[in-house]
Length: 135
Image (cartoon, rainbow, N blue to C red; front, top):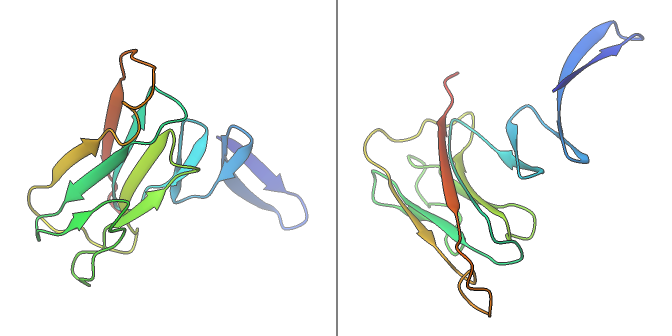
């Protein structure tokens, strides 16, 4: 993070540098990419590059959010899928900062997608980070 001072306006602003990008205040830096963080987020990242994997979240209201169903149709359950970059390193599901995630248990799955296709048989490490931001 860096702090910029605008001498014309006499203001400070904090900027999160993420590789060659600058993330916004509602974003986090994961694997050199800016991802939405919102009030609740589930972010998956994996060790094998150039292959796609997918995080899948079932909410307490029994809605399933993933790349094929990026949003619920319920105003009471506002989770959203975000494809990060080309989807070959990071996958993210988040609730917007102005939304309130449902109380209860969330079920999380990870689909290997194309990670197990091809000739590369090296082990794969998948990390899922769950963050709850209070406002």
